[in-house]
Length: 291
Image 1 (cartoon, rainbow, N blue to C red):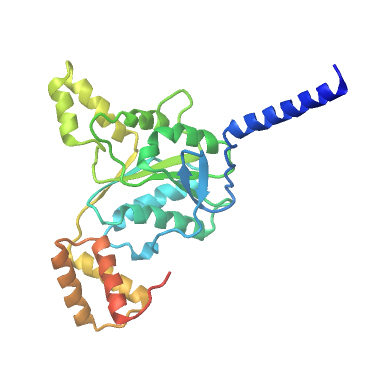
Image 2: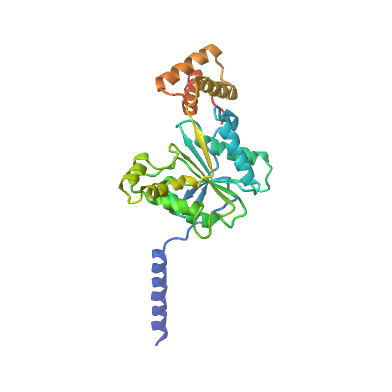
């Protein structure tokens, strides 16, 4: 083989290697757990996307849920300090601050400075629940403790991904990593539609076993924290808290009348309705809200 032939063959091999390299998928980015205290799980890239600006409110502004707030704070503090703690399902009336409470408690725990390492909050989207084992495998050896958080968790007909969640939370050979806890919010106490559960009861050979299969998902959560519709006084207390916190300048009588009219036009009273009123009020008054 002549030198020219060898050189030509080498060039062709280099071109072939380059072409094959372009066909190969890019290497997955490596998550930097030091980058932030809050992350969003990108299941497609197996990557924890840091969130520098978290959408949350001060824990002192969440009113009407004092008992469940204290329970969640206590459970989270124990977990952050390395003590045993439970997975938590926050369920009930919409707009009553379920997801806001999770984010606010996380911020309050880190702000206390009691723990050597910051507690990490990772949001996982409902449609990515079946990738939960992969996420747990990624973070189980990290020197941090993690709250995995899924907002508005529920399952529809013919959706079997709830079985993956059951196994990831408490089942399987390995079980849930010691540095991981799972918090979820839902409008449903049992996470599955009632008609789905009742249909299983009516068509199964052994109805009780079929229902147990569905309901046992909720049993993986050691704490069930219920959120219920607030009273008028609790709604007005939320409004007053926001007004004081943001320093809005309005007469108390006018504030009460406008807040009640707002809730009447919306047909409901909740923390979400109260916050929407405050945004409207601040805009009309020409006063900015605090970050």
